Structures are given as C-alpha cells and as structure tokens.
Image (cartoon, one colour):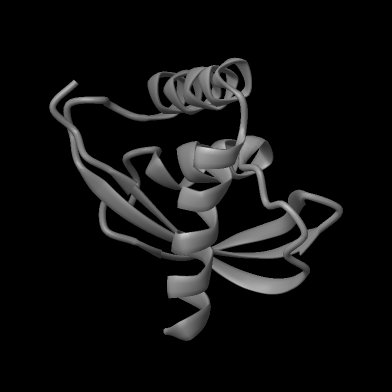
Length: 102
C-alpha cells in the first residue's frame, strides 16, 4: 500500500514538475492510448506492476483490471510507456484510473 501511495504522489509531483509541453505530451499519449485500446465512455481501474529505472517503466504486467476484455489493460500498458518516473527505481505498483464519460 505504501508503494502505491508513493507512486501516486510521485506521479502527481512528476506532472507538476514537468513543463507544459511535456505535460501536454503525456496527456496526449494517455488520450491516444485510451482511444486506441478501449472505449472512453467506460470507466476502469487497472493495477500494473513495473520496474522503474532511468526515469521509465519497463516490464509491466497487469495485476488487476476492473473491466476485463475491454482493452483497459492494453491502454494502461501503453500509458506506462509514457509515464514520467523521475529517479524512482525498483519494482513498483502503478494504479491507473480511467474515469470514463469521454
């Protein structure tokens, strides 16, 4: 649970620290991943486990998916490729929340 809170806090801090251009690029990547793989009107929560190193996530696998067979697992894996991680290293759990309604 502590790792989840650290990642969520780190994610929020990373987004706050990046420039507007970089934040826009991440938001664009997230939107593209979602529209390519899942229905943006549906909501879902996906939990990933990844290795963080050199500012990136690698070797991600899906631990939990609230909407199986609807593409949110693929969307989360796609988003993880663009997620800024800063100096965090090691195995981390990354919660991804897709709010739906779009």
